Length: 198
Image (cartoon, rainbow, N blue to C red):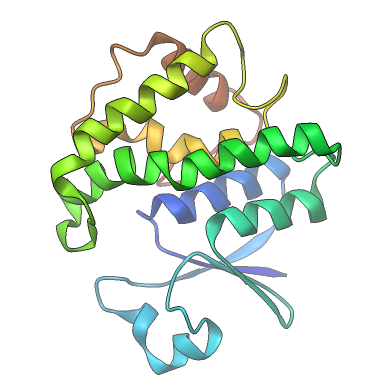
């Protein structure tokens, strides 16, 4: 049985839960209370010396970092549509995974942290501006197409969804981004979709 070390409001944890749900993979959810510092306890640091969540455990094998977990899950439990082995298609997916880890991290992700978890925000002063820069990139990419990387949903869509879907948590308005809003609706219509608090 897979064990996901998880916190309900973490967007990085949510992207892992979302992919698990879309793939129909059973797992046990081990909640880690970040406010109580459970990720910094000696017991947790034995499991993950980085003191971060999400972390996925499969027997003795442990995987940290949400993007890495998405890749592992796709390779282990999904057909190739979620992460193709064709080098060109895989590069497209990986490029948008990188955008989720950088542009969205410095934009919508940090805007949300600035409002709700300010001590965790690394660039509160730039978060709104960075959000609109990132959203403009995503809007242009999604104009005239259904999905971010390829002609079907991939793990790059899953990686981007939490931060973009929760832009309003950081005071970022998605009204100027119609292609993004249509993409969010398509994501929510995928079989097995779960929301942040499911």
